[in-house]
Length: 204
Image (cartoon, rainbow, N blue to C red; front, top):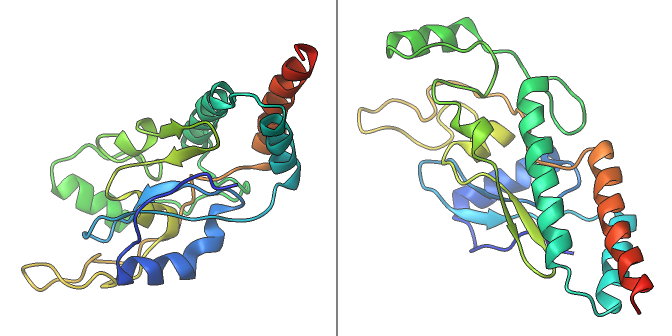
């Protein structure tokens, strides 16, 4: 099952994806690479056989699975947003706290500092989680340019230099995964699929 499909990433994005791929947990998601050379791409991770088997049974029943994909997408949007408040990844591991340097840089720009990781002055990353359902898949992720770096982290200077010659990013950014499927998510998604499968079998 492929949750997301998108164009091939740039060379720099592919290196970044290969090194950090395991950080997503066990879900394929669509996201933008935040390397200042934005590219949408996909990651496909195997696993969750129970989910795939149930989805295949639903497809074999001749059912339109778009409503199920829509429900799953809505659920995963809510689950992903909750991680920002819990400040932990899909595997339950707490995010690395913000540093004093981050606070100083934020306040120096005149922005209001939020001590919670990944919120930032605009809070867009936590609020703009998107789902794109189709009849056979659902892509869940973020279209913001910084999303992939926040998910996977980046080393100082990994994306080259700025017009002023400074490194991009200017310092190391720790990975703080927010996209993915947790064990609790898998249970809920399986319940959604089983509900649609039971309804399909009852009407046959």
